[in-house]
View (cartoon, rainbow, N blue to C red):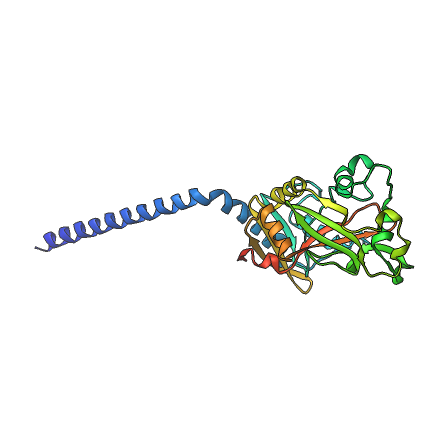
Length: 299
């Protein structure tokens, strides 16, 4: 009697175990299917998270080995820790993601214009066509900065095209400049009539007109920059608490069309840092809360 009971119990246990194994097998297959869908994205993202946790998170920032006069030295420290080689390539920093560090205005990139008023005559054809000019009109970079910028009393009256003299979207500033989008080209205009400066009469005669194009970023140039940098897998931002990075946030990708939309709704701004005596154009495009709207994950 006891023997029969034990046999029955044994069969029941075996049946239950088989049922459990079948259920586990079904769950495993489901997990595998999900992993197959997301395997590339998860692997690249996990690699970046691991680099951050192992090399950056909670580590006190030290920039002693960086150039003390270089304002981007902390960024270079972060790049080194994340095993990113500093370069100017038009591609994402790592595994399809662009890296940024948190600040009040996070830079999308330093994108020189397709043409400036001071561009060489053979590279200023679009501006000449807009303004109805011939190649006879010549202007160098320092002239450009003096004509459209302001002197800085803290820098021995050194002129710069930065700060208040740089236009925001669809708004004429005191220096008679405005930034508009036309057929997805980003264009900066100058108007002598809207220039409120007392010194404007010192400008050369060819500038004493309205709606003169002084800089243009053509669609094909900017589309390549934005789509190559940010429309692969997206971006991640390293967030700092005091002198240590503590969090990493991932944001979804965006394209050139969204970039233009954000310029028009003033979520992205042109932030020039051009000044006398420096060969770089410092034509930055930056955003603040624009980035937060795209963040989807935080670790």
